[in-house]
Image 1 (cartoon, rainbow, N blue to C red):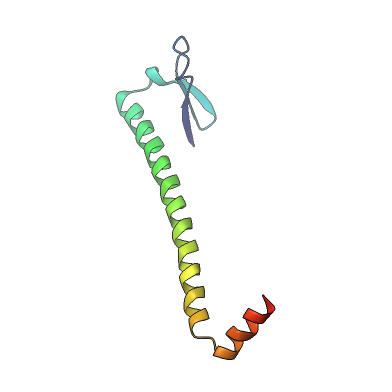
Image 2: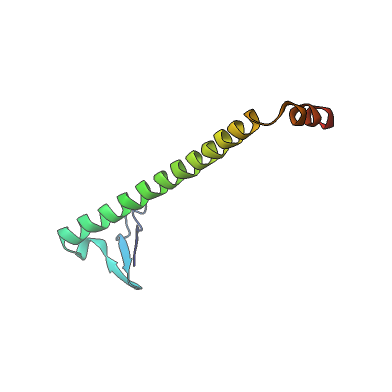
Amino acid sequence: MIHDVHNIEEPSAQPTVTIDGEEYSFEGLSVETQANIARVNELRREVSTLQIQVNERQALLQMYIKAISDSVQPVEEKEDEAVVQ
């Protein structure tokens, strides 16, 4: 598994990346591998953003389903709920 690049915020430290439990100097990797790591990190951010969007849509979906269900309840049930609340 590839982990994020480390030590980027420290200018004096060499950025490292952990791949399958082994730590490597980011700059010592081939340009292609560096590009692949950057893409993996970008995709992880996108997946995270998309997961948030999925969760939000699921909540909205449940809200609409409840609104539809509530709209077709018999009038007596709605009146009973109003008295209880």
